[in-house]
Length: 263
Image (cartoon, rainbow, N blue to C red; front, side, top):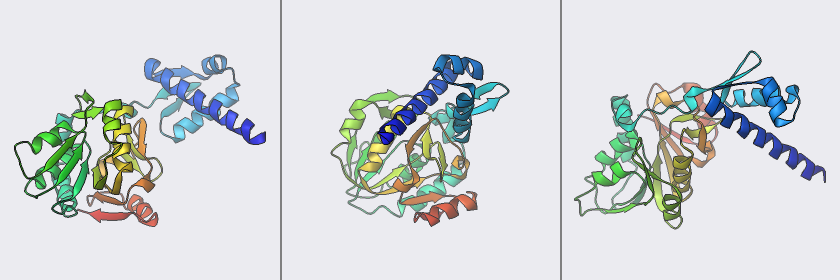
């Protein structure tokens, strides 16, 4: 009975947190007194909720309330990101390419660093490429050397990703020897995060069905948190990054048994 009561309180807490975030997404700011009346809980409880959400980097507390952490939902387009940190991304992709052998089944998510990797493995033979990224698939167009499995789904124009239930179901029975994924935000506590809930679900499925998961992440993504978690850190086997990545975060990854490769 006590366990059921505790679980009930936890669910109520999660529901309150979701309400607060949903409200902030629309109105950008909120008062403690308003939340107290709307949620039917004390102002002390509301403040505790806001403290928890601030620790999770979902909002910023202000005097008497909170404001949305706008960074959570900001996402430059693929074309805007394509011209950023090109040297670092190319170096990371070169290290990633060393892990791919002819004849492998390789999962590739969306992302500009993944795009660099795609171009570096065009000359391989006998690869089976599994992806939800339109740009990845088109890179291999015209080649008879590889088999390309492109999920269906709805197009997310800003990232060239295919998302939605169709994309997720397409990956249900697909197995990859190795999967390479990108992320918008990454740290050892919150894991891999992205502004898009739908895109996160597809990438999570790709990771779940891979024997070995490799995260390609440049230094600018560390210690940043976007709105929706793709997956926890423990689902990653190898992290490939550049020399500017924070040393303390890399050490935490190694302590968790994750291989770290510096490009």
